[in-house]
Structure formats: structure tokens, C-alpha cells
Amino acid sequence: MAYVQVEPDDQRLEEGPEGLQFKSFLGADASAGGPTNPQRSPGVGNADRRYLADEANQRKGGGSFWNIEYYQPYFDIDTQTVIKRCYTTLIPTEAKTYISTHLNPPDLYGPFWTLTTLIFCLYLSSSLGASIAKYLSTQDKPYEYDFGLLSLAVTLVYSYGLGLPVVLWLALRYLGVGEWSVVEAISVWGYGQFVWIPVSVLCVIPVPIVRYVLVMLAFGLSGWFLGANIYPILASAEAKATRLIILFLGAVHLGIAITFQVMFFSYYVVDKIGADIPFPGSDAGTGNTTVPRWI
Image (cartoon, rainbow, N blue to C red; front, side):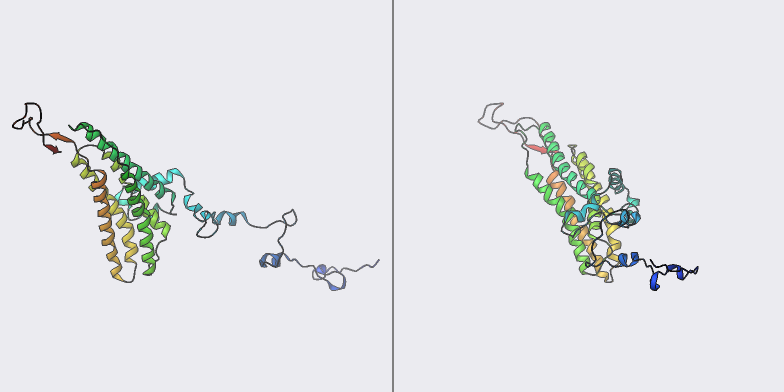
């Protein structure tokens, strides 16, 4: 058995027989992340040394753009935040700072359910209002529900609330404007349509002037909200002609409001004018007619 004399020197403390030194390879293992290094099995002495803080800050979703897991973080939001983001769109003074103050980070859960709720509100409110108007009218024919309005509502709302912001985002990316993401664009457009939900419910009232005022109010509030959040993005482009896109968006927004008014809120109460007038050659009380009046 051989003995090696260890000198009380700091430098010699790290040396073994024949001048060997003890080295730590933890740094080399941590820096070498190539596929040639074998994966260490978890254990007490050979644990995976990852910091919990770094794990918490990592993106919860994973995968590529085409996987569902990629969109998971955009649906991870509580109900109170969604409700706050919805009713804040009704406050005109909060429109200019909506993205930086209330929409950070953007989500897809709120816009999806806002647009879906609007579809059912448009159809149900239109059907209920039309049936009430039919009941109050003098016509004897029963009201027949038009399920084609539901398909029309789905096409209009999803095309305007989901398709248009995606097309606008692609156009701005082509023009070199990358101030916002496609998720942010959809989120702004989806929450901007929230005002149509209470308006569609109130349009059950069978009074035409009230419905016209409500539609104009919804058109103004949603238009101001969208313009206040979209125009600064357009103004950031180098080509000033890009700002003219706001005129096209305003025309589309006006067309949507007119379509809602004509297709879903155009029911009236039909009443007769004056007394019954018998035709010549017919018995009194039979064969007469009345002229309908739209009020």
C-alpha cells in the first residue's frame, strides 16, 4: 500500500496521485446540449437542474403553428377579464388606450364567444321581434321561422369578425407594417362587436324609430373603437397612402350595420287603415279588403 504525502498548500489540496486534479464536469454537461450527449436519468445525485422560475416563464403552449397546443395560451383567461374587456369597449374614452391597457396580452377566447353569442342574439332577437310584430298585426297568417337567417348571421359575423382582421393583418405585413400580431387584430375586432349583443336584444322592441337609433348607436360606438385602435397602426406605415385603408374599413363597417338593420331588424307591425270598404257587386261585410300600413 502506497501513501501520498499531501502538503498543506491550497494548490496541492486539489491534486491527487501523480499530480492528478479533481475537476467538475457540471458546466460541460450544461453547455453541451447536442444530441450526442446521453440523456441523464432523474435521480437524487443526477437530477435535472432546471430553475422553477424559468419554467414558469416559458410558453405554456407548444408545437407548431398548425397544432392546437400552439393556441392554448390564447384561451387561458379568466371570465372576469373577458367581461371587463367586453364592457370597456362601450366606453369611448378607453378606446385609444385599449390595446396597451386592457388587451395585454391579447386572447382568442373572448372574441370567439363574443362573435358566437352575437350570432345567436341576432337570430333569436330577430325571430322573437318578428313573431311579436306578427302577433300585433291584423294579418291572420302565423309567423314562420326563417332558419336561413341563422346561416346568414354565421357567415356575416364570422367573416367580418375573423376573416377581415386576418386579411388586414396580411395586407399590412405585405406593406411592411408589423406593429401588431394577427391574434391582436382578431382580439380587437372580436371585442369591438360586443356592442351589437345588447343592441340586438333591445331591437326586439317593435318600434322602428327605436331600432334605427339603436343600430346607429352601435355603429358609432363600434366604429369609434375600431378606428381608435386601427388608425395608429396604419399611421405608423412609411407610405402615407396606407392610412386610406381606414376609409375602406369604415365603408365595410357601415355595410355591416345596414345589413343588420335590413336583414334582422326590419320587422313592422301591420295595421289596417280606416273602415272596411265593400266592392261593387259583393255583399256587405264580405269581399272587402284593407290596405296594410307599416308603422
